[in-house]
Length: 141
Image 1 (spheres, helix red, strand yellow):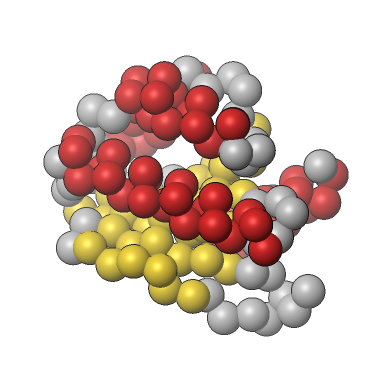
Image 2 (cartoon, one colour):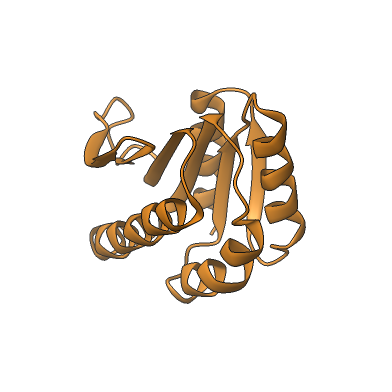
């Protein structure tokens, strides 16, 4: 696999984007600013739809949540109880975070990780390190 592959933009909204990096391979959900709970859920659900499609081409896939510029919301419990089972059903077990600057967003990420014992998670300060962890984790599967 070409480690220098370009990231493909899959979707853009004012509060986030979805991309795909074949060098990992992973879906990259970049969150910025404030998204309502429904907007946040819609972005995660759409991203999962893309992950399912990409997994047909790649046998393994990870999820990278770039939350560096995200403002907090109240979706951690929903993500753990409703989104995670769908993620696991699709064979997606590894999720890396680029940690947010905003304190409430950071609390949301912490809550999600605590509520998600079946998902292997790790948090990082930058996207390249988060991708590296995902890449190595997927090699172990």
